[in-house]
Image 1 (cartoon, one colour):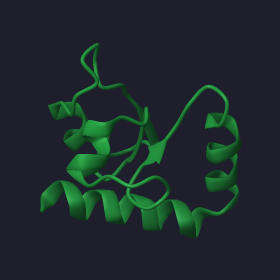
Image 2 (cartoon, one colour):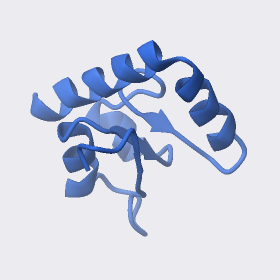
Image 3 (tube, helix red, strand yellow):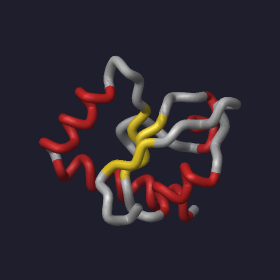
Length: 85
C-alpha cells in the first residue's frame, strides 16, 4: 500500500468506516473512497485528507492530483496524520 499514490476502497455494503480506510491513509497512500456520512464523521475531508469519488468525478480529481503533485502529497500527509491521530 505504501508504494502506491492512490488506493481505492469502499465502505462495504453498510457504508461504514472499516480498517482498510485507516490502513490506506496510515500507510501513506491517498485514500480514494465513496462519500458517506460515516467517512465524513470520522474526519476525512474531500481533497483535504482523502479523495471522495463518484463515477462522475473520479477521473477529473485523479487527473488533477497527478498534474499537481504538491496537492497530492498534502492530501496524503493529512490523511496519514488523521489515521495516526
